[in-house]
Length: 463
Image 1 (tube, rainbow, N blue to C red):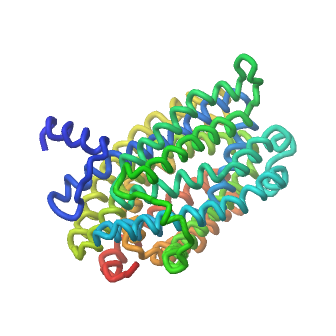
Image 2: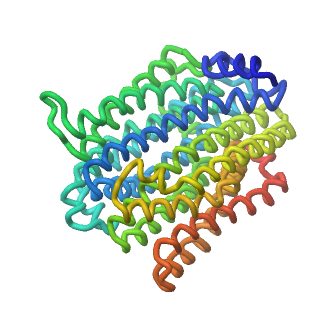
C-alpha cells in the first residue's frame, strides 16, 4: 500500500463512508476500521491526560482522588461494559446478516438498560461520596478535598455510560467514524472547560478538582446528544424511529444473555483493579499519585491497541454473520500483529524516558520516582498487551464472552491479586510488587488467550 493509497483510505475511514467489511482485502478492512477506532480511543485517553495535567496543579490529594474515584467507576461500569460488548457483537452479527432493523432494535434496548443501570449508580454516588472514598482507603484530608469530584462524576454517570454504549453500537455497525467524532466533540469541550471550572474564569469560581468532574460531565453530555441525533436522523447505518422506542423483551433478554459473560469478565477485571488500588493506598498519597499519573499516561498509548482490538471484534462479528469464519480468524491474526508491533515501539519510549514523561505532570520528587517505576515495569509487557487485547476482544466480537471471563478469573483473581499482596505487603517489596503483578498477569492472559483461540470454538457461538 503506497503513501498515496494510505492517505486516500485514511480520508475515507474518517469520513464515515459506508463500507462492506465482509469481502475484499482484510488488510484494508483492518485499516479502515482501526483508524477511526484508534482516533476515538486517543480522544478518550486525552480526557484522562488533560484532567490529570490540570488537576496535578491543584494538589497531590486531588490527583489521588481521581485515582480512587476512577477505580470505583470502573467497577460499577462493569455492567455497562458487558452490555456494550453484547451490543457490538449482536449489532455486528445483524449487519453481517443484512438485518438492519434487528440492529436498530438492539441499539434501543441497550440504551434503555444503560439508563436503568446509570440511575442506580447516580443515587449511590450522590448520597455516599465520602463513604466511597473512605472505603477505598482515602485519608481524611483527601476525602474533604475531593468528595465533590466523586459526587458529580458518579451522579452524572449517565453521560459517560450512554456515550460508551452508543459508541459500541456504532462500532458494531462498522460506523467507527461516528463514534470517533462523538469523542472529538466531548474531548474538545473538556479541554476548553477543564481550566475554566478548575481554576475559575470571570464570574465562574474556581472549583478545584470538582471542576474537572463538571467539565467532563458537560462535555460528554453534549456528545450524547450528538449521538442520539445521529441515531434518530439516520446519519449512520442504524436509524432509530419512534416505532423502535418500545420494550422488546426477546431482544433485551438476548442482550442480557450475551452480556452476562462480559459483565462477569469486567467485574473480575475491575474488582482486581480496585483491590490493587487499595493495596497501593497503603503506601501513601505520593505513591498513589505516581501510580495514577503513570496509568493515565499508559492509557494514552493503550487506547490505540484497544482501537485495533475493537476493529477485530467488529470484523469477527460481521464476518461470522456473513458465514465467513476463516476470514474472521485471519482478521484477528493480522490485527494482533499490527497491535503488537505498535505497542513494542511505545514500550521502548517508556523504558527510556519514563521520569521525563511523569515530570510533565508533577514536580514532586517521590511522585516522579514511583510513577516512572510503574511506567517502566508495566511497559515491559506492552508487546503482550497489544496481542492479548486483540485476542480477547475477538472472543467478545463473536459473542463468546464467557471464555474471556474464565481467562480473567484465572489471571486476575487466582494469580494477580495474591501475587501483588504477597510481594507488596508480605515480602515488603512495596509498590514494585503491584507493578510486577500487573505485567505478569497481562502476559499470562495473552498466552492462554492465544492457545484457546486456536481451538476455534468461538466460531460456533450463536447470538
